[in-house]
Amino acid sequence: LYPKNQKELLEHQLKNLKKEIINLDCELKLKAKNFVFFDGTLASDIMIIGEAPGYEEDKLGKPFVGAAGKKLDEMINAIELDRKKNVYIINIVPWRPPKNRTPTDNEINSFLPYVEKHISIIKPKILLLFGNVASRSLLNLKEGITKHHGKWFNYKNPFLNKKIFTICIFHQSYLLRSPKSKS
Ligand code: URA
Image 1 (cartoon, rainbow, N blue to C red):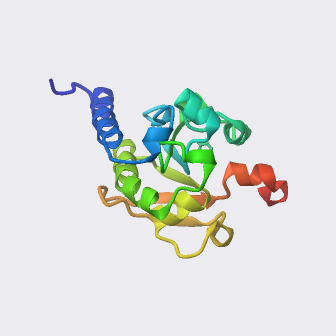
Image 2: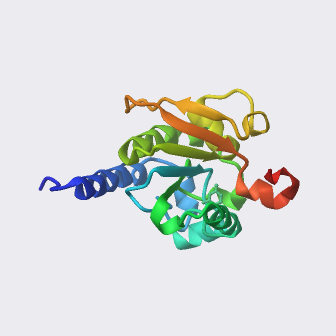
């Protein structure tokens, strides 16, 4: 059955994307408890991309629900937006890496095409990339986040014609460890 309206079409595309990602061969899924796909609302102008699930995210199957998530909620509320209504949140890697280690280049590269597809389904107006993994992989940057924090880019998605305004910012986990970097 073909989807009738925009919302059904989105749900249909996301369901297919989820199947594709879950079926990928990846060591991480053998050790993780839950697949972490997305949180937020489908009709969102703002898409946030983090690194990978941590302990709490793995337990609940949702991105940014632990300490970094609380920090993110504060940031969203500070600009008078609502996490449930105004943003769509994913990670580059959908399975928790053991002991929260940084995902390897191999892991990042194997999920990247699906993150690109995910962006092209949601079609956000603004993309927020949190930390090194999301910033460097999607924008193909050589230098890390310290150099690019707060900078705007025109991100070109391989499946979309229009470029997306994209900003790189320090990851919440880093801000929790180094509060002086908040500004
Ligand atoms: N850090 C991330 O990058 N993503 C999460 O979902 C939680 C913490």
